[in-house]
Picture (cartoon, rainbow, N blue to C red):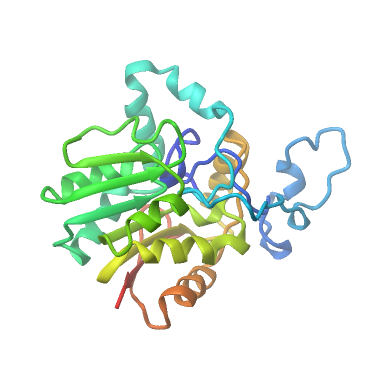
Length: 284
């Protein structure tokens, strides 16, 4: 989802070819919008229903922080456009992102829930927007952001002495950081990941959280509203990403299948759209 420009990466909901279904299941169409209207390469061709198409997953490839099975090979169109703004790129990025999600309100809510976290990890940190806000809200914490993009943390502005960005696969990172973090965030990543890989990614995430720690899970909920149509356009068309969204019930079921029934102790809708779901998970 675009908690970021169609030009950002993972934590703002942008990726470059993550393995996932191209369109929600058959009953998930949007008012006035059909998969055929949006399907890439469909002009002048007979279009196959997108709810039946899936990108193949090679089991031998590792799960990356963003959930992708392979890193992006080229820069997205939206990113090239954004970089054309030069020194104003960060301002343009923030303005676009704010039309979909308030990261400030999101991190404020997380900080009220876990005010004393001292070691924080963001999985799928992209270019550093969430980590930047974490650094402001947690002035005493050491923060790590991981992703596979070579541009990891590129737009971060803040204290680099205590904020570290790593370009690394989650499968490589987790064994060296078992139970290492008080708080772990996964923001707008799973809808870019093929559904058969959700549990594997979450199990790796869970291993990095210390007993008594917290897990903040932010996702985009599939709804038949204008925001969802715009979000799909940003994720799928402007960036060429391949996404599949879930309902709130889907996301809750996925989390509880790994962290346990009753582990979700808080739920919040992040402004400005009700599609932004934040689930707060206590780890025993």
